Length: 311
Length: 311
Ligand SMILES: [Zn+2]
Figure 1 (cartoon, rainbow over the protein chains, first blue to last red):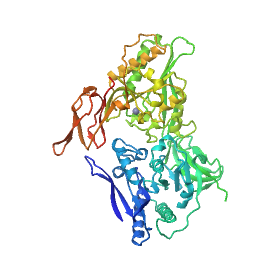
Figure 2: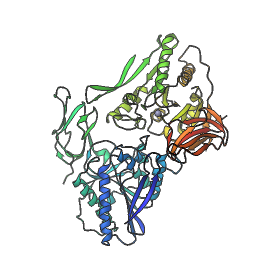
Figure 3: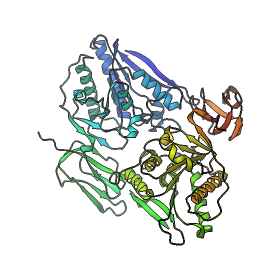
Figure 4: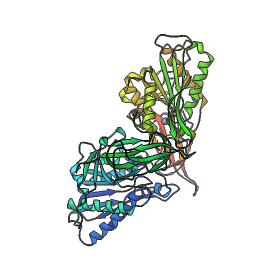
């Protein structure tokens, strides 16, 4: 294992923000794994740190294939993590909306430009990040429909779902989109939570990455075969909205199988405790996304359902 | 008449309301013209509040002169203004990246969609922005390349000091202005002053421009204000001066003044050692139209912009 400095942001009042990469193996730039660009992606940082640990052991046992190099960048935005802010710097910029960046502009553009420069030559790119809407997910691989996306490769992570998203203009500034634009086969992995560590989901994510690296011939590793992934287009999911604001009391969780008409949640009046709304399932399906705040604003998304897949 | 465009229930006993003041002509007019004045998409930009006030006040002073409809939307992001937050506090996202929205989506989508629906049909829309808390700007119109040809004649009427034909971030595809221009509502984006502040002189200057436009569109029979034609610039005629390192920036020239090539416009100092880190000079002569006001800077932060050859 070799530690490399990817970039260094010099700060007048704080320690420099150093982005570090951990490299394994030598030769062709085979795979790069990138951790949190937002300050609340703690689970993602945990997963990347444990990947470094696992890869170090695999390398010591001679299990990184000859002529293949892997790099893990466990955190990008440590300045924000340390002060528990989601976004970067005094302007509060989302680094994941600042790609491709450049070497002459704003501090955040220079940072994302330098980062992309260092990682764009890898064949496979894997990013751990969070969704802009707060809530809980079933773990999945997400890809943008750029024309270069390859869902059959995404299946090789062995996670239950691969979600393909049609990019909006705002998505063209994400790392995933720009990585693909630079001909890296890029995947984004979503785990079920951000701010806290969930051991089960972390183990699943680590296993998924190692399984992928094994199937691509980058490492030798004993793994279970994982799931046969279902490919889902985001626009095909059923969104269930909250029509009245109040306290949100959920009766289901991510991954649950629900039936048409089943009670999913109640909205409680925060004053008198009465039930303002009962949210029911409009279709049979699996809960893919769940609102997980105790508070509900009108027209929040309560759940996203995947229609039942016939087995 | 104050009307609610859309309201969204917050969890505990409060609604967010997007409101507009519709000012009608005293006499009934066949197919009257309509001007929409919007502001406060970014909650830290307050300059537009004074402009909204002053336009309504001048019309109330001579209601007999109004022969069209003026719709004023002072606060498209009311929670943001309340909290001095640039982003929408409900989503932590930049509201000016959420247009055209979706009438059956989540609250952010519905708000954006309702705003568009309400403005559609206007003969012109003027979207007032201020700068942020970091730099101070002279009153200027920002035009995207896509609509420059149609909008330039209107932009010349605004009494701004400058028209900047630029293709960068402020004229991004998901902005209110872009969405409205696509839907055949000519929309001008004005930028002036600084965040968290009101500059009354700039306010009066632009209000004169708005009444100039009302006269041009045949919507105001009062006296036409005396205005001037803005300087027109393209990206090629703007010099960006960015910090080469971190430190404290102290300007040594006035904002909105001419500077000569090689002139020192400020210095970068180090507060702990008492040392000057460097003098900041400009490469070309021109008008210093953007000036850094927030002293703490990183490498890459904008210190000044010079309009070099528009005169
Ligand atoms: Zn703005």
